[in-house]
Length: 173
Image (cartoon, rainbow, N blue to C red; front, side):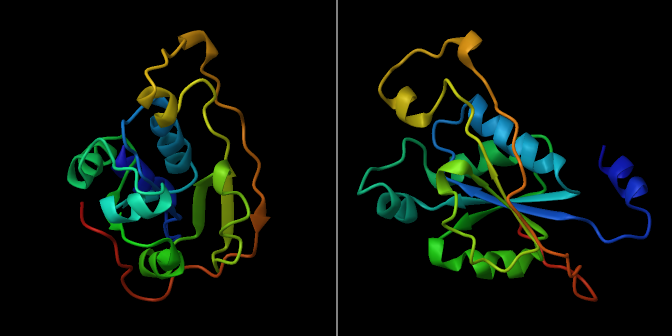
């Protein structure tokens, strides 16, 4: 699969996609988000929230799984190129710059919160309806027939500037 992508790229630079999440209690909604993000480019880099960041984002609520375990689960998803720890929401621009991202993908629950990020394109993907980490924490059963992943539209597009000359930096899983 990786060789096929390289052959289809020809001489063009790879399209680099970046996304973030807590990915606690990994479920089909997470998998679908990562698969859709991976389909948008040639490389998908994923920032997994640290335990400390998750506590700040969620008013002190702890994760079920340790950050290393969550990173391992995300790295196992087909299409994920690399995984790294996201330590702060305020560092989004630095992460975008570090990987040379062309596309930033976020869940639509973050819509508008990262529009200031300088990246050629931002895509907010709708959540998979019928499943969430919150519902799993509360012990609500998932009804397979209710799992719906809505289509998405690209909400911000700017002419891409391309990668800088030389090597690009990628995170190590």
